[in-house]
Length: 193
Image (cartoon, rainbow, N blue to C red):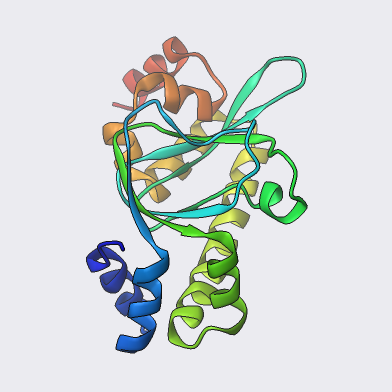
């Protein structure tokens, strides 16, 4: 059983009117999960089978290249759904790890339940579909940002879309997203005031 207070508020912001029966079903499948900073939420050595909706804290996705290089690809924060979709859909190991940057609290759902609600659910399913439409737009903006080879453009993206990351994440994590060293990030901060 999970605490649904945050989720209920989020669903209402999307304009969805979930029935008590639906909330009971969601509560039966969801589990509140607390993850300490610097601890994996999902790793790349386990086949993913859960979906994690963040209610507080910041997490990040790290792509592990075959040559050993690691790239911070995106941040997740309150209201974001963090998972390893490629692992769930293929039934194979994922190529990315999702790691808590700060202490994170969220609701953990089995992928089968989440996918069923996405496909056939009434108002809760509508919420998931609307959330994914919003996520698609965010991901498009993120992809454009990642293709810009200018740290300042990526920094603007963070300031626009992840203001809490700017406040609470370590400089090394912000610098990793920007594709620069922490020292170069400090110089940009000084230059931009």
